[in-house]
Image (cartoon, one colour):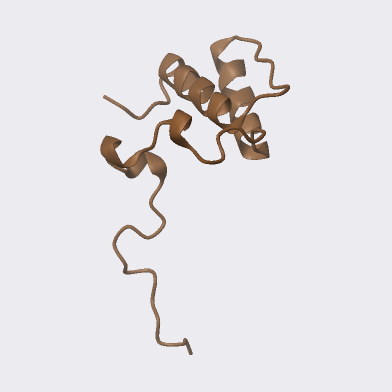
Length: 84
């Protein structure tokens, strides 16, 4: 039995950032936490993309915003951007 609340049918539940319209995505320069160190998942994905692109990426001292920008660049180069 459930508590009467259902999240599964709610539109947009579980949406990824790539599913949002461009106008809903903030520029990394505008992130409140953009200067904080890059997260583990960011660094892991960045390493994966760099490997696919045949590049070496220095992940030391990357901020969240810098990692996001680099991920965007490498997604474009590797064809993982999901854009048209």
